[in-house]
Length: 173
Image 1 (cartoon, rainbow, N blue to C red):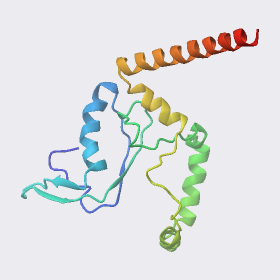
Image 2 (image 1 turned 180 degrees about the horizontal axis):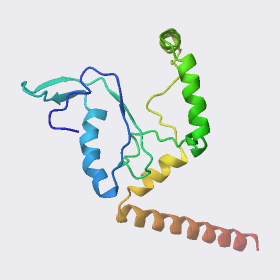
Image 3 (image 1 turned 135 degrees about the vertical axis):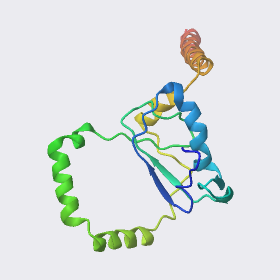
């Protein structure tokens, strides 16, 4: 995010492509992105113009080839993993050919109409799908205390289950 950034102003959908940060930088950049993800108003600073606050309508799609590209807060992100099969040159060539032949303005208009008429009454946007990729991303961002507490909780549950089994066996005798 640049000093004179105003690329998200007025945008409903923003694609952030090729995020390549590592664990060292991800917490810093997460805090910058968090503003664009959660705040209802954002500050824009166009070059050679005065800074101002504007309404934030943006939804971000973050794309990366790196699992450790962003700091994950459990309630904020949906994470999906695309099979590498689709990245093979033969598949890319077929996808480009399909796009060239079929992705016309008329197709885009039909798709837009479909989306606008789609009944989403039963969709809960607060309920983020839990995926293996999301769980791995969340686990990577846990600090040592969180990891320690998880191990202790798991050990406690195992010990409790063993104790209850022993208790049940003694009751049966």
